[in-house]
Image 1 (cartoon, helix red, strand yellow):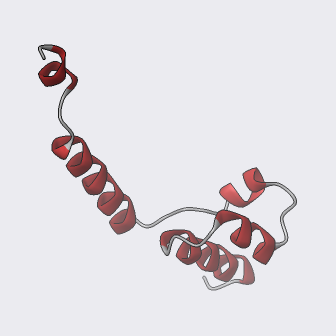
Image 2: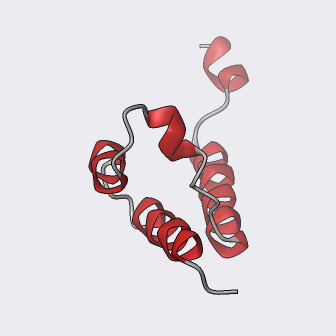
Image 3: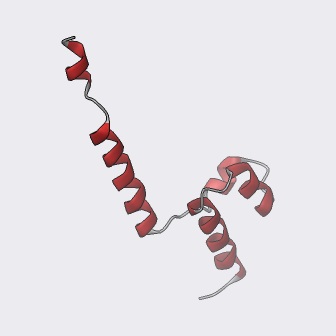
Length: 71
C-alpha cells in the first residue's frame, strides 16, 4: 500500500543507497537524532548484496597478516 510513510521510507532508503551524507538525510526528514533516521533505513536486498560483495573483495585484495609476519 502506498502511504506517505512508505514514500518517506523509500526516499530515505534511496538517499542512503546513493551514499548521500547521513546528516543531510537526517535534516531532510527532520530528525533530531541520527539514530531516529537509522530506523528508516531499510536498504534493498540488491544493495546489501552489492555492499557485501565489495567488502569480501576488499578483504581478498588485502595482504593477509600472516604474509607480513614472516618478514
